[in-house]
Length: 536
Image 1 (tube, rainbow, N blue to C red):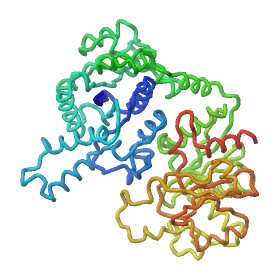
Image 2 (cartoon, helix red, strand yellow):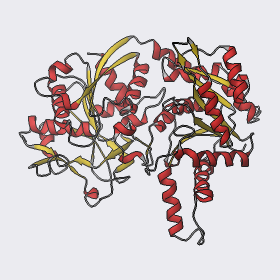
Image 3 (cartoon, rainbow, N blue to C red):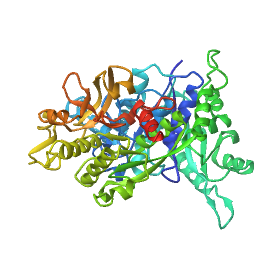
Image 4 (cartoon, rainbow, N blue to C red):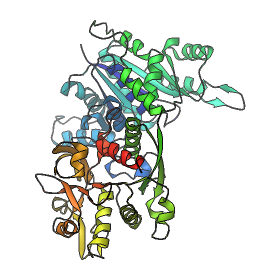
């Protein structure tokens, strides 16, 4: 059948959970045997979020093909269980960049380049591109921001045109909105939703589904009122109440028959498509998630812990690994800049595992180095990711190799022992955006290693986002004192995994394993790490 499109807009307020809704809806449609992909359309002018501060934007998610993207793509991959790509994240910056490049190349034949039609046409081309490169039944397009934002207007016009061109049997508009509860009045208020839908209508878009976020259940009279004033069927007013976990949302949507409304509008009546969703495995996963057998406290030491989305893929990887191992993980967030030699033991004394998170810049580095030392000395399971690996190498070089001034050239350019150094191919690069070592690279694993026991295979592919590396010119000093480099990129010889055989569980990785965790299939490093922490 022709690819169907679902456009998801938001109103009233940001942070309502459009990304979670899209991921949940995608999983629900996949449970009917449909091939689904999701894309995020971001209205900011940055080409991608790669240069944004984590406090500004949250985590940068990296796809296998090396695109730095919005964190919602992490939700898409975790829920759907398959890879996204550069085509799954579109920004206004990228759209304008391509239009300007085409204009410079003379592709518009001397015409005046304008928002309409050129920018709009470019957005439309990005939206449909997924259907041209993959065999997909449904594409869900999430439009960032809220209706009424100036920067979102070109995207709304683009989906208006696409819906007109494709017809209602091939394109559907879903509007996510807020039904606030006013305690003083003792009731839920629908007026913000009514105004949001009216604004959407003013742009030529009539929603087919209304997804209403609320802290309280929507009673039948309220749904009828919303339907009456927003021109939708009552059954198309969907309740999106706060859930115990984001992984409960697909089940909540299924209970309300959202998938049936969509299949009906898309006229998907193929006998090969199951009439009921197959959510057996998902339901079992949620049951395991909510019925852990043990509780374990693990420290997440990083520079951006005050922002809940800065380490989103890491926190979700812990949740997924916990569900698989029947462990409820209590994450103890620690600001690395607050850790010193004097207070480290007091801050970390009650944790069963320590993860030192990735990051950039010198702030809090000594705290991370101190943390890596504490885990090593006290035999606490330790996982260092990217910068976390590098801090563990610096700590080991200083303490165990007699290289007291060991450091990274990122923080100390004139260190006599640059254990961590800028990659050779990065030294002539000036632009910061999209120029790091990004995306999937091979890692050959030594068979006589803990890493091999964890992966149970000699070659794996992992995703990267870094400029600095373990310095191979100094590597032998660390190896001579018992550190094992158990994972190496076979082409470049760069260190991918380092471990300490004398320690119960002490592993650092240059890549980002958190990007590969999915529901029912958490990354083996996280599963092994959680198991080690739970056994202490």
